[in-house]
Amino acid sequence: MSTYKQYTIKNTVYFISIYPFSGIDDEYTELIHSTPLFIYKNFDSEYGDLGTQSLNYLTPNVLNELNVKESPFHVLLNTLNNEIKGLTRGNQLDSKGRQIDIFNETNYLALKEYEMIHYDLIAGKKYSEKSGFFKVK
Image (cartoon, rainbow, N blue to C red; front, side, top):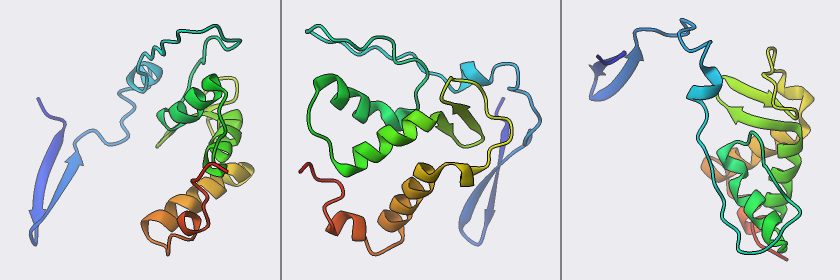
């Protein structure tokens, strides 16, 4: 049975949950927001278990493993990874993997920079792209 109802208003389709914020997944929050990850390496490395990570940290983690130069964007992601391990809508984990109950994003400067980069790419004038923020130097 679907938990969403579909509504169409003026040719726009909206999906509305019939269980919004009901706490159904409180007991299983970590399980629902988790996906097992296995990174195969054919060389020895000092890095071990990555612990809890958001998917947006996957590329910087792989680049760290390979010990290659990173773009300023990946450096920003590594900084953000040190502050917030789990970063999804409505579910944030601190640097030790514990749920952040009251999330105040003003305490996380790297998060504000990350959001500004996203805004610049999606709705802005793409200054970050033009300035070479995503290029390895």
